[in-house]
Image 1 (tube, one colour):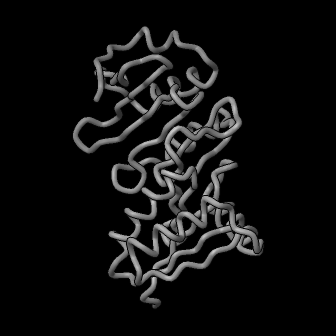
Image 2 (tube, rainbow, N blue to C red):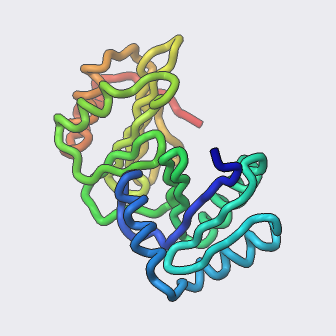
Length: 208
């Protein structure tokens, strides 16, 4: 087992899941020219964590001792966010997208670990909700733009919870009604179609 941990970064341009992210990173690593944002990231990492090893190409690879994973990862994701870069943890299959970035799609699903599925159909939505659990996959987000989303979360004590936000809202809204997975799926599918009638049937309170 290796005692080194690796994180990868490149400019956020297309929606990816973990498998396609690994392929994309390999493709970019074959490119010799590094974008300016990656060069800036390399300099920031060298200053903050001089023990880390940085390899720069079309994709930045940062390797560091496993014992420093938590500390370096926090810096890595923060510095990527500041530069519009996607950060990828290949060990966990986890993607971190810059805040406000959105793929060129009418709607998309974001899984707990950051994988994005474009234009999900009703069967895909049902399947993804069915795969949720309170430990490994506690939430799922369906977006229709950077500021328009519906999130389902699953908790031990309260079960399913819906949170929604539309453009112009000062805060998200949390559904206070008890829900079953079937009802959550119906809400997601209606939201996907742009139908807001389902929301008027539920009780909501301001979220954080």
